[in-house]
Image 1: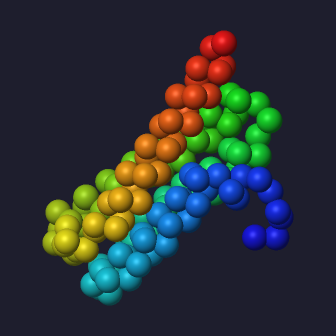
Image 2 (image 1 turned 45 degrees about the horizontal axis):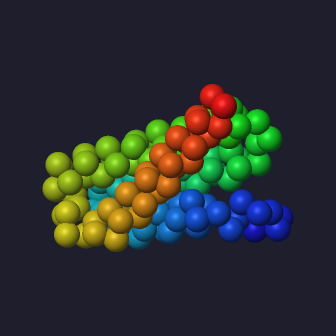
Image 3 (image 1 turned 135 degrees about the vertical axis):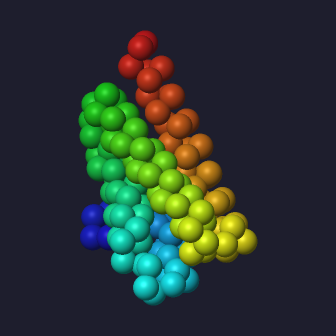
Length: 124
């Protein structure tokens, strides 16, 4: 927000912002009596995706950068699993998740591509 750094223009950085926003939007629809347990965990993991992307982009070492992108992808899988729980418990409906589904898949694909690219660069 305050630093004008190049990573803020990366497609994955912008996609992860959309992903976080969509997570928050969907979680706001969850029944208030059930919100505070899993909701906090999902929000924490969603924010972790975005923050690990930002931190990874700042690393000079390709190995360090890949590690942060792998942590971001792991947190993305954690969010996906959290929403599986909410759907299984009928706290949200699959029909409410279309936009979030697109955001999750976009981030997962972009992170996987970055990780694969960095892995091939490290081996070279």
